[in-house]
Image (cartoon, helix red, strand yellow):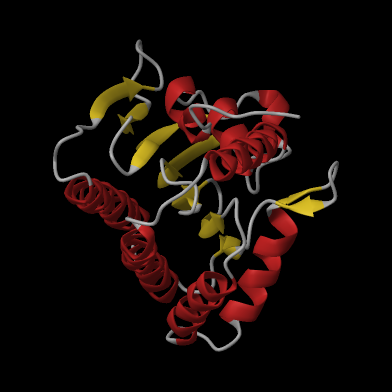
Length: 275
């Protein structure tokens, strides 16, 4: 398949997914709290792409939720070329993706994260995944979440769930605290086995996240919480912040490629605490 067709297919899907996620989030908010949308360009003086990030704050359900779409291209700065697959031979790149981070008002509902992307240098690959970060243990929720992920992965390959769950557990980990960020999920990168099959899996990952966030939120929407629950949530958000600023690949990649800083840092919670 022609590379330009692959680029169009993937970026159009990520944009459609941004609309679908935002529509569902607006329905959860009963359309009373609106997204603020910001479009941006990677380079105001050149055609190097850009994107749109949408943020909703102080809703009935969400303290803050960001849904970011990007499609950027150009050249990697020399100092980063050796760190990016395929860029040492040729610094030109093209990348498109969608990322979502949800921070909830109700501390009994976990924070949720999702992203998928397609990157092209002298090589092409998919990456992405999803994970959930509760501030209070809920074994049933954890079991259901992982069971749904396993069912989705098994539709594509019986080895995916075990492989990508392990990758997620190892990736979303804070070494300096010796603790996981949350209850895991799936994570994959450098996925370039077969474009059609890989793209089908990436699309299914997006649709599954849409189903899961609706299910998880609606299940706990009206549960009563205490100030102690909220304090635990603020402390957990501190851990979330540490991970995203110290270790997150997407944050580093976005900043290295001249992405929009506000869009990249939308993952940070509105209020976090440290003891």
